[in-house]
Length: 171
Image 1 (cartoon, rainbow, N blue to C red):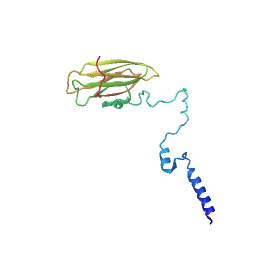
Image 2: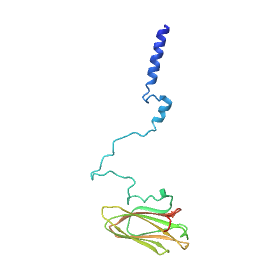
Image 3: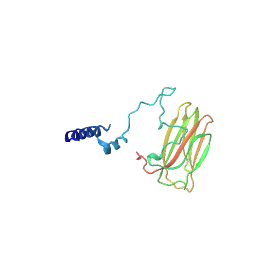
């Protein structure tokens, strides 16, 4: 092989090696390109014309309060009727109890923290999930505590309750 042919072959090899499909970034840098998110078509709309939002409130799953740094004590989903949930280690003075409830259905429900004598009513709607979040600053310690929920028969609900380490400032 002559020097001229060897030089031409080297040029062809370099030209082919440069066409790696990564915009000239080369093999090593091209590995990171696999981590780059790809653009895809939007999700198809459902029969109602809306897309499903995984973060939308639901009675089929408990409200996500742990993402706010709240230590979850109890939670439940796809519930109906009345129920009582113990608060492990009771009620702590000076702490803030966060209670999140999602409800759906034609009717009312009531949530009560015992023995703190704190309660709040909720009005629920048919065909619509209504989220609620209440934070209760507790002034007295009690060795036991219970979250009591009562709901009309057509109401479905989910809940989560826990201690909020950084509650909103009092005004």
